[in-house]
Length: 423
Image 1: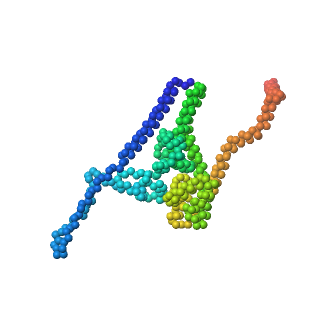
Image 2 (image 1 turned 135 degrees about the vertical axis):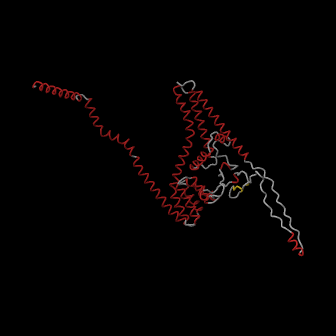
Image 3 (image 1 turned 45 degrees about the horizontal axis):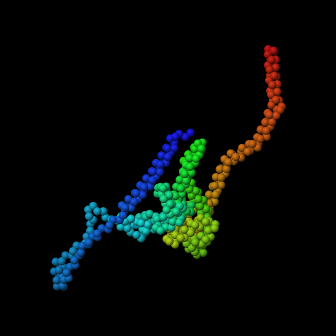
């Protein structure tokens, strides 16, 4: 029987958690607003007026000698020194095309949509935040799952750290969710599942009989945890399947690119040609190649390939993108590099298949012992067990054994008596 203090304690803990979550969201929003107000660019200071230089009076040729000795040129203008206690404002490089002065805040307009990263990043440039799809003003809200008003509110009720949010974005990109508000949809879905589990099991707790109340309480605890974890587990499973499909398609991609490049097409045109052929065979790779071709038109091939390697975290994709970037930068033959790398990738796939085959032999040992050997034992020992059962339970079997045992005992007793008489 549940003690009477159990439900007030559960409701009190839930209320404290809800208040803590609401206070955390309020503090985050307040800190963000304070930071925005503090980072407002100050009013530009008044420009210092440079000292005017008065030209010397023009002298006649007769007065040249005397003027040259009497006239002293004015000193060069000295740069205005900053006031005591005033820190000079340095120049901050915001991007390759924008220079901000002082404490000006870089907005999304100051950032590059497809900024080069990896081997193309310049070490001396100041890194700027990446432009995300949800940061662009005027973005279409049709991809939001619960509407343009309800979806952000539900997502904000499930606070996450920046690291976890970035990890969720990577998992969604790997799973093929390229919509602008995919991360927001995931957070809103997880919150809805958690609240739905609480409502369902809470209603069951109210209407369930006393013998089922422990199960309803267990559902109140386990249900929200499953509602929070199952969407991410499903996305990770889709991401793994998608990576396996792309990994299997990479050798065919290299062969098709080699054929197109060897016939005179550029890498960009070859990717567009391969994209049309792979739509029905490898839909995941064709989707990624479509993104690469679109980003190539916006920026350049190097940046598009680096973004492809960041979206799909596979060794084959990283090697492929590095190969194309290096061959184009160094001016080497792309056809020969693709041929060599295609053979190497197929050999690595064959070795990986051999390794999995060798592991399968060891893994099949335990199912064989646990499932097959009992059946073998029953097949071999079954007739003997049946014969022993018939011998003990049929008439004459156990009785004859008892009769023989008693006869042997009587013979032993008679021999013992005979030996005693002889003594």
